[in-house]
Image (cartoon, rainbow, N blue to C red; front, side, top):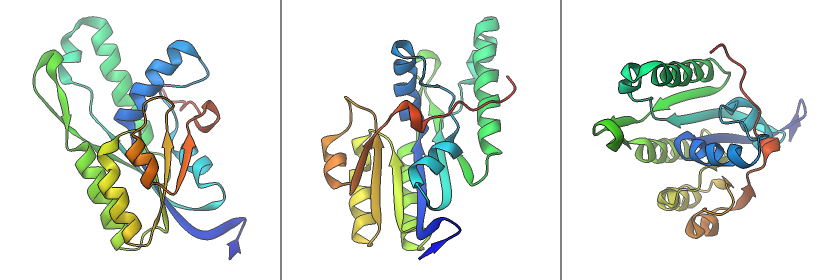
Length: 191
């Protein structure tokens, strides 16, 4: 059934922004058409492709607070990242979800991002909040979650970056799309 140009297939999008950011940071060094600070709502709309976009969950790690005392450059990085997350949190259908940081100084590690995304993806499948989920990540740690979501009768699509995607994740996904600059639009925000 089609309503107002959209099909009745409901889509939920799960963005592992920590994974995406690392790839975009590297790609912008080669090709400036890739924006590091992208608009996750536009990404979700483009990936849903005329299907009913229900929600976009955006998983990220907060910038480390020690940046604020690392001189003007560190303070600028911290405030830019926080302004970006604030702008993302105001986008329609986007829910921002933070990981936690553990460790000190340069040995910080994000914790609870993959687990949070996995739990949310499975919970939403059980609750029937989507028919198809789209995972934006190259991380093979999501393989078991994808298999469970499929066992629950849901479709799973994967947006991955060339060169480092988990083959196991590609194998268990129903549809695979390689990331292209056309999927990503720069998010304009005051910073």
